[in-house]
Image (tube, rainbow, N blue to C red; front, side):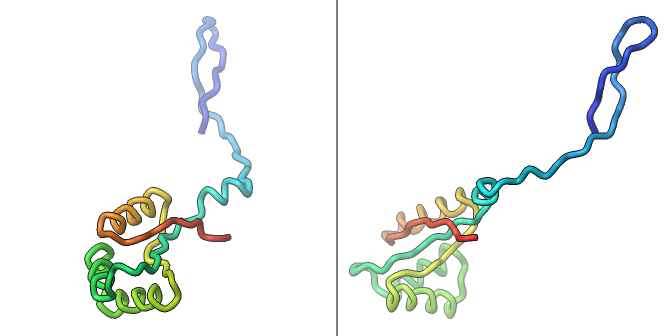
Amino acid sequence: MSKTPTEKNDGRSVLSASTITRQDTTTSSDLEADLPWRVVLWNDPINLIPYVTYVLQSLFGYSIEKATELTMEVHNNGRAIVSHGSCEKAEFDANLLHQKGLWATLERESA
């Protein structure tokens, strides 16, 4: 609800409630800004499979089965999506992986 001024008898303005309508003006660029981000974990020649599995479990709370599945996807396909969410969350998660010596990047989910 918005307040609009109305004139009182003595010349002072007072606010009265009036109803306003809002048109949905969502654009495609607005929708793109709301798309979640993905954290991509990349294969590397340094880190061993048990270590990567342990990191995924400890950072993201994945079960041993899920962490192993993601680790094997990275190993076999060269990459895996290990996290997703807002840009800030994805950046935070990628930074955590970097701190553990893993290679991670961000990508925006497609519509």
